[in-house]
Every structure is written in C-alpha cells, then in structure tokens.
Image 1 (spheres, rainbow, N blue to C red):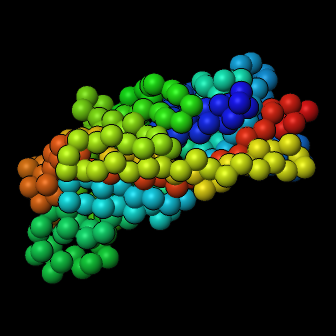
Image 2 (image 1 turned 90 degrees about the horizontal axis):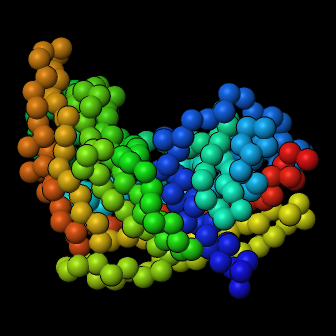
Length: 276
C-alpha cells in the first residue's frame, strides 16, 4: 500500500515537474551516470543536490489541449529528466536535465487564429504555420498522490514572425490553471466528467521502476484571452490583434468548456544506482 502511494506520488510530482522546471536553477555541471542509466543524465548528483535521492525521467507522448474553439494535439514528445526527494517532491536537475520541450503545431495556422484569409495571398501557407509552446506561469501547488495543480501560459509563434514574439494565451498574472488527475474530473456544465488512467507498473533488472501508458486529464479549467499578439507586416509598426484573436478563437472560454489530456510514460530509480 505504501509503495503504491509512492508510485502514484511520483506521477503527480512529474506532472508538476513538467511545468516547474522554468522556476528552478540548474547546477553548473553534470556527472556521468553508470552504464545502463544514461537516460538519467539530467538527475543531479549528491554534490549538486543533497535532497534529491531518486532520479526520474518522464515523456509526454500524446494527448491534446482544447481551449475556446481550438484543439492542439500533442504530436511532439516532451521529455523531463531530474531528481526528487523521498516523497517525490522538490524536483531539481543539473545542466543536462530539465524540460526538453517541443513546440506543438496548431491546426489552422495563423489564419485559423486570426481569421485573416488574405494573409495567405501575401505569404503562402508555409509561412503561416502556427506553433504553441507551454511555459510556466507560476509555481505548481497541491501535490497529491494522483493529482497536481499548475499554472500555464502558451507562447504562440510562427516562422514569418507575423505575430511578433510576445503573443500568448495566458500570462503570469492570468494563468491557465490545470488541475490534472489520473482519476475522474468534476467539471461544470456543459462538460461532462472524464477519467484519466493510472500507468502500468513494471520493474527491470537494473532496479528501474517503469510506469507506462498513464493519462492525466482536466476539463474544469478556464482559459483567458490573448495578450501581446501583434500583426507585423513588412517591418511596419505592429498592430495589436488581441481582440481579433479572442473573437476568432472564442476566448476567453469559461470553466467547463475546455479540456487537457496528457499521455505519459515514467521511469525512476534510486540515485545511488545512477551515481554509485
């Protein structure tokens, strides 16, 4: 029973770690892991972090995020490597660890975001590709065995720089607060409850614990409007299009109309095995 709780606690800690990494200061250097544990290279040694006695690595490989009338699938994996204490809390990492994030392609591109179809004639479809990258908007809280709460903001970018470099959905002062769970949600209407999935547990000969095919969910959060979005054409003075983005994307969107799903694998092991 105690072990089961620790394993579930690891899931919550890793979910928080995905978004807490930007607030942490990595150590200056990283030692070489023992043979067979190379994937934990981002876990801090004892000299780098006295408290971290478990090494952890997680990969989010699928899922989606729905906000307003936009759905962004998770098609590019996100990898997290670092260390936690005996309670699977206080995630930290060295210079090789942290969050290795990939921008996610947004269906519909800049035209879908703004509704400005005439941009296609000027730039072509490739230059109007749109990407969303999740960033921390505060400190994760409410750590429990199968849940975690964290604030997010999403940075919107495109190859041609048509939106500038400050276009976000959510901000530090008005974050998108996800309360992820592997259990069942309790959203306000019109959303109905959805259920996550606890991962499959296995062990290997190296003492590594594997937890695969887990799913975090939340469909009870609200999403704020756009901020910092500007239309920049041919080097002219940028024009704010926050209102246009909100109208086209149906933002802000109230609680009970959005959804987040994260499919993940997790592995962890005692730091003493990684750095004997």
